[in-house]
Length: 336
Image (cartoon, rainbow, N blue to C red; front, side, top):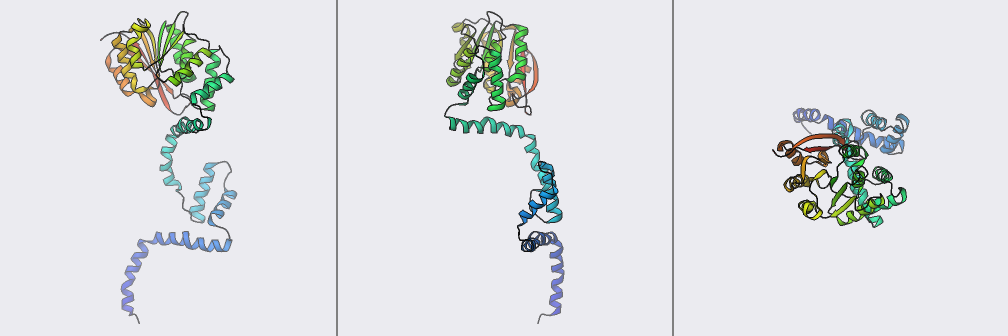
């Protein structure tokens, strides 16, 4: 027979364990024992009981009401392990903050990959097919409106878009440039936007390094009604074209430059333009997407070089109001 003294000697240890692990014992009781009893007495699972509680205590179509009811069920009625409101707040912060970035990833990358596989043609070719069936040939406004509808409602495509496009339109109208250089034609959206505002006798040189994109862009530009005399498409890397503009294309001065190609090339190509002597006093450079994806080295150089008056046009990413972006407007004022 166990001595009472030995039993009493274990009492402090038992009390210490109970106090130290009291919440663990409570969890065992609520999560296991109560669940077992209710499973037997109700004949349905805990999850089914929770759903029945949601049906009678929450508002259909209201996620906040669903979550609040879930939290009340799990804390006051029957324990169920969810992330809960406190940890849920920390979890939600990055999700909420970057929700538009996740949506952009989904629309610009995942959807594109799936459609590339299922259709067997590129996104740019799908866009051109949509233009053929939904826009009016020879009408630049119709081409641009159809492009905007495609990119915002059908399949995302990065163009300057209608909102930032108004800045480009204003600069073209106000300055009436005769010689314009575009770096990054892509599918021809901005080339059409620029060309429709040019004065009589002006010419746009649009540079695109990707041959497939250039083929589509050529079709789009001609569909909008612009010939080679107005828009000349040059298929070559920008770093090769810029040094040849004077000798090969007879360009003495650029009145306006629009940059919308690889952001890491902005600074390099700006310095190439300076070195080639193609920028004159008053020449304007407009650079898109300087905040997202961003061109920090380009901006730093512009601000510190002393060669430019500059202005930042705050905006949002084309077709995504929740992602901050901007455009840099530079006016060349000459040597230091």
